[in-house]
Length: 122
Ligand code: HEM
Image (cartoon, protein in one colour):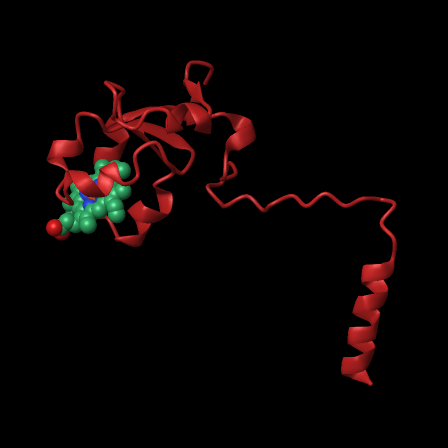
């Protein structure tokens, strides 16, 4: 547990395969070093280059990669995103955005909503 490396999104962003840097991407809060996979990718190097240094979760999922592709991906895993910046919970579900609620909020928005609700009902 303790020996999984943790990286910030900022650190991943600085690894885009340019200037002698490796090429990292994020997939579901895990970090992958694809520097040596670029030229082997059946979908071409360009598609991966476009995601360099970024979260490629939706790009990867949207094209409908096979389960084989997911196995390949595991070979290149180098670590995980730091806890504070993770987008998925322990069950692999997308975390809900936490919206801070100010306790001293004036009830203006609520009365607005009341007007709309009353308008709809009445
Ligand atoms: C992140 C690591 C990635 C790995 C390990 C990976 C792996 C693979 C593999 C094994 C295939 C062969 C088909 C299959 O098994 O599904 C494939 C195809 C493909 N990949 Fe990826 N892929 C990655 C990222 C991406 C990204 C970010 C894109 C961008 C949209 C992409 C676009 C494609 C396309 C378009 C094909 C189809 C190629 C064809 O059928 O001619 N891949 N990928």
